[in-house]
Image (tube, rainbow, N blue to C red; front, side, top):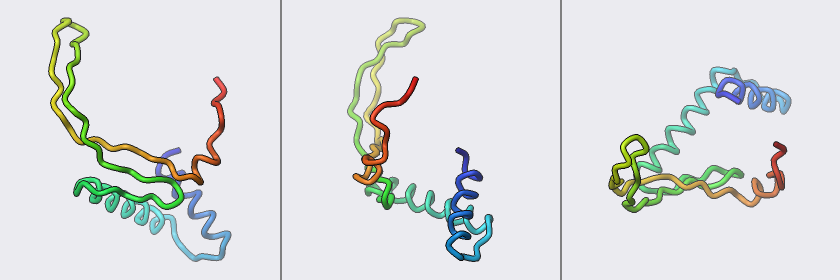
Length: 100
């Protein structure tokens, strides 16, 4: 699902509930949600995604890796990454297995 499809689903849900909102407004809200989430992560704070989960910044330690082409051992410097922790609500709706 891309951003526009996601926005259309939100728009349909809100219109079914009697809200008068446009697709462009929904797209702006999605953009704002993403901006705020990015700002929290940049500051080293967790970003709570209500009923979905939490994005937490985590420090990934330095590690060694191997260049597949040359076989040379390389050192990967420490960096900040993001870890997603699903909410219990999301865990309850996830399928137990994924059909192949």
